Image (tube, rainbow over all chains, first blue to last red; front, side):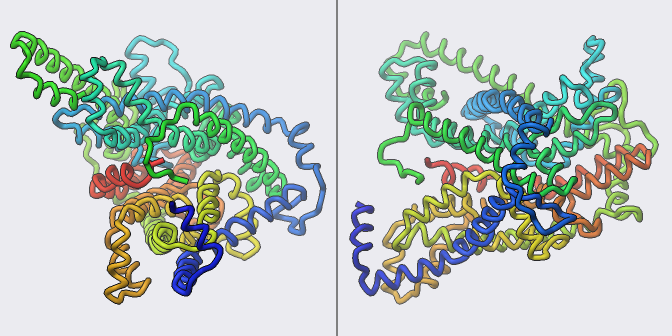
Length: 316
Length: 306
C-alpha cells in the first residue's frame, strides 16, 4: 500500500505534496548536512590518507600507494597480534554474555514481589560504566593486595592469578569486568520478554506444552529479533574495546602491556602517539572491512533464526 | 512462568484439591529458588561497589587493602575525601566536573533538537527519496566508530578545532542514526488523524510538530537525553584525542590523569582515587533512578521492534 502511494508520487507531485516534500527536506536538512560534513568528507579523507604518509608533525601528505598495507602485513608485528587479542576477547564474551544476559532476564521476568529492586541492582553496574569502573577493577584485581585475590587466598587458592599483569589472565580480567555489567543486556532482553503476549503461553499450556517446550517454541522465536539486535551491536562493540585497554595496559606494573593491545588501541597508538595518521587510517580500513564482513555474515544467517511476527512493523 | 499460573487459577475449578496443593507447594519452592538465586547473585554484583565505597571513605594513611577484605559499612567514615578531590590545589576536579556538565548540556540540546526534527520527517511526512534516505540512516547506524576516529580527526584538525571543545559537541546538532531511528519508530505509532486534525484547525507544519508531535514524544526524548548524558559523561577516547590542556579536561580523562599523576608521585592515595571515581558515577546513578521507568519502557517501545 504505502509503497504504491509512494511510487505514484514520484511520477508527479501535486502542489500540496510538493509543499510537503519541501518542508520534509527542511526538517531533514540538519542530518543531510551532517552526513555530508561529518561522514562523507571524513570518509573521503580517510580513503585518500590510507595511501599516504600523513603525519601530524609533517603535514603535507605524500602519496605512497600500497606501502601502508605492505608494512601492515609484513613489518608491523602488532597488527596480527592486536587482531588476535580482539578476536580472542570476542570469543570470550560475545556468545557467553548473550546467554548469561538472557538467563538473568528470565530470572528477572518472574512475577514475584520485589523484582523492581533486583532489576535495579543488576542494572546499576552498567550505569556506572567507563573510566570509574576500570579504575575500580584495577584495584580489585591487584595481584598482591586486591580484594579478589585476598578472597581467593582465604578460600585456599595458593597462587591466585596475576590478572592484568599476567599474559594469560590479562584478557579474562577485562572480560570479568565487563561481565559485571551484563545486567545492561539483561534489561534489553527483559523489555523483549515483556512484549511477548500472554495468550501464546496460555494456548501452549492448553495444548500440553511443558516449560521447556514453551521456552524453545515461544520465548526464543519471539525474542529472536532482540537477540539478533544485541548480537549485532555486541559484535560491532567488541571490535572497538578501547577505554579498559588504554587504561589497564598502562596500569600493569611489571607485565607487558601487549596482552591488552586491542586493535583499536593499536590504531590509537599508531595514529596519535606515533603521529602516523596515514598508517592508522589504513589500519582502521582493514578493521572496518573485517567488521563489515562479520556483520554481513551474521545478518545473512539471521533469516534462518530470526522470527518476525507477521504484520509487525519492519524496521528497515 | 507466572503468567501461566494465572491461567492455572481459572482452571482450578475443575481440578482436584490435592493437585492444587501440590501445585502451590511447587510454586513456593520455585519462588524460594528464584529469590535465593537473585539474592546470591545480587550480593556478588554489589560487592565491588561496597568495596569502592569503603575505600573512598578511608582516612588518609589508613590502609585501603586489608586482609580480610572490608566491606561497607566500616568504622571509617572520612567524607572529607570527596571535598579533597574536588578542591585540592594540585589538581582540583571541580573544573573537569563543570567542563563535562557543559558538554552534556550542549550535546543533549543538539541531540534533542536535531533528531526530533529528522525523526519527524521520516515518521510523518511523505517526500521523494524517503526510502533511500532511510536506508542510509540504517547503514550509518551500523557503521563502527573506529572508521571515523582517524578521518574525523583529519577533518577537525584541518578546521583548526584540535584542542577545543568543538569536536566534542558540534556534531550533535546534525542528527545521529540511532536516535533518528528510535524517534522515527516512536513517532510512527501516533494516529495519522492527528496531523490532519491539526491542519484543519489551521496549524502550520511547524506548529503541528512543535505543539502536537513533540509533546507526545516525551518518552523517546527522555531516552535520547539519558543515553546522550551517559555517552558524553563516559566518553573517554573523544576528549583523550582532542583535548590537550588539563584545564579543559573532562571528568573521564581527568580521573585517569589524576591516577597517573598520583601514581608517578608514588603517593598511595587509593582512597582519593576511589572517592573521585565514585563521585563521577553519582550523576549517572541519580539520573537512572529518576528515569528508570521511562528507560525500561522506552527501550521496550522504541528501539527494538525489528
